[in-house]
Amino acid sequence: MLTIHPARSKGEAVTAADLVITPVSGKADLKAFVDLPWAIYADDANWVPPLKDEVHGLLTPGKNPFHEHADHQYFLARRGQEVVGRISAHIDHLAVGMPAEQGFGPGTGNFGLFEAKDATAARALINAAEGWLHNRGVTRVIGPISLSIWEEPGLLVKGFDHPPTVMMGHNSPAYKGWIEQAGYQPVKTLNTYELDITQEFPPLIQRIVQSGEKNERINVRRVDKSKFDEEAAIILGILNDAWGKNWGFVPITDSEVAFTGKKLKPIVFEDLIRIAELDGEPVAFMMTLPDLNEPLKGMNGSLFPFNWAKLLWWLRAPKCRTMRVPLMGVVQRLQSSRLASQLAFMMIEYIRRDAVEKFGSSRGEIGWILEDNQGMNAIATAIDSRINRSYVIYEKAIG
Image 1 (cartoon, rainbow, N blue to C red):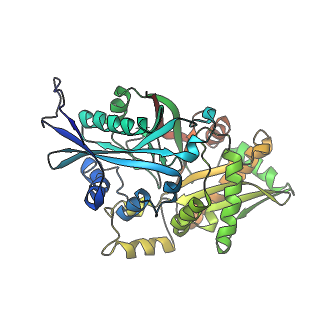
Image 2 (image 1 turned 60 degrees about the vertical axis):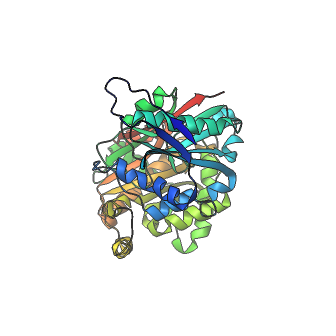
Image 3 (image 1 turned 90 degrees about the vertical axis):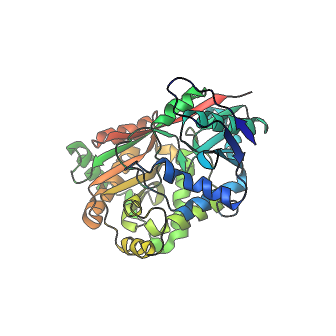
């Protein structure tokens, strides 16, 4: 247990005498860890409460396969009986095994799941996470990563004025200053782009799509949900090849594929996922998801007693304003070619049409996209989209 006696600087809102940081231990602590955001964001109209059962599953070894290749410790901050903050410290051994020039590598650990009611609690929590990591040989901390790079990476620094889409994070604007005051420096920015999908793309993009349709070597097809496992394996193969040299890439294990597939299957629709083939070989894909956050926003984190029926009804034929593209990739051997962008534009256009016609959508969101991913940023710009949210990943050397 760590007890902090905070110095009271001029204008500081903290009035409690003692701040206590403890490792999460037992069901009551875990419940307090999961429940804290409801207190933090009670007055934030743009926060979308996650399903509490889903959060418990992500945090629990044996339920989330991330824990098969990671060590972790969760911490809570309390003043008296009030929980005033939380944080995770974790080491992803697959990330540690990646080349250092790709972002992680030997000696790297992470913090994540960060929430705090004030700067004093924030600093104490970060110190606790760093101490746990240091004791396990970590010399460089990257965060926030919650928990995997494939889940919710980065701290929101732009886009507080609208709700996040499915599988995107949201946090207090105050966190940026608190993390930077703890000695962290930005290492990478991740952006999302939004666009009006009711409007046709510029004439140049339409011509590129039409040219691709005349190319007999190209076939852009919908996925076949009746062959879910086979299609997932094709997409994973393209993803690992396309993203393999990207900053922050960590291989996805078979058990993680199965876990994610089971979680996403209810919001996977054949009209919204395309696989592009060249001479019969799958070489690119684009995955689009209806914004599940739209029906979840009013459910306050629970499917009971009647929200489960509302959600099942929505999933039968979802109508939603926003579609999100979380993943898109073209195999590396084509990435520097004109064909790569042509395949991307074709997939985007076909999904755009179906999203508007069959799901009643009017808005698209693409991302996240690395700030220095020139190819994807150029594609986003070409279809008249604009950056609407930015997330920063920070790093700090510890010793």
